[in-house]
Length: 493
Ligand SMILES: *Cc1c(COP(=O)(O)O)cnc(C)c1O
Image (cartoon, rainbow, N blue to C red; front, side):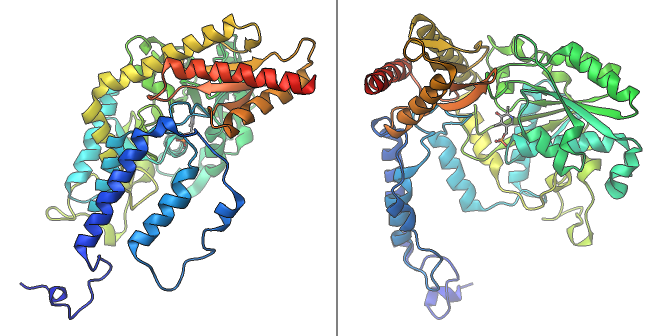
């Protein structure tokens, strides 16, 4: 059957009018991006965006479009030079993944096929199931466990805690709300837990004040005795403790809560155990680090990110739930226009839309699958292990340098440090110096560490979730830090 569009009598819809021109544009974009990766080390990690550059973006979309090549040029000239820098070998701020070319290829392919992973019968759904099964086996969860790829650990934590809440009054809490619980629901995490846990408590109507922040011990893990005391106190006061959130890798220093011990406490008090393993859970892939996450296989729900330490392009996180039936009971149920069929495109149960709050879902599974297939679990684990060795190397450099001081242990991949400043400088001066040095490293495009607070004092924080970093990068960072420190001292002298 001839397509009318081919004889030019009808519009081609939104497809290119000239496929050859579009092909040429795509080829040159691919060349540009490969050059971009290959030369990443030659560029500053970050550079300030000139105000004129921000203002140069048109204030709103024009009524009439322009050629794709022109839009691409704007992207190349105005956007590309001012990225955050997390693909650069000396980016160590917050907890960022550094991406991979192969992940980007998968992202392009996913865009091309434009699959909607809400459900139904198509291979992309089977691919996501394969990815989930892979992660279930990595973390030692049973076959009856379920899972879902989501935007990140924040979303995975929200969904995991919703399943924990469902367990309190199965079948009634969805319609009756929290009143169905009968008592005030309370949960626990350490003072070092990520803020996404409190956010989830707020969104779920539990209230963040009902999430008790338990103090940490000398190793920065949750204080187990204090945890159990808090649970007892809440019970005595008539509340219903229902969940404990264990951190596997805290943002500040990469500390681990003792998951096995927390499991014991959770069992004694009938609590759900949710593990926030955003990046730290992936220690599972490195045999030398696996002991840190001992007990993770006993989690009721586990949240982690593929876009951090697996370097899958943003965004991709994962939720795993031990009790797949309860997971489905929390989110399942569809109206008639979404009912499934025995055969045809509307078959393919179970559908992912019954395991979360989104109906339409992107093809995140492709970039995760591509990454896992191409690198293999062993190589991904080696990259994680290398980052931890590099963190220990940096810690040794800092310890050996009298002008610097390390301010926290290094259990994983994060080093927190300070420049001591000139002799006799007080904590306020040191705080200014730490902030000034961090900003200076950013502004000069040398490196991007971030700032945090350790024991109430400001510290510079280097988080190694970067497969491009080399030992020489860390040495260059220390050298720059010392030289900026000298500069500042001579200025104020
Ligand atoms: C990054 C992070 C989160 C939040 O994950 P997103 O993917 O950014 O939503 C939660 N917990 C920890 C420990 C993290 O590092």
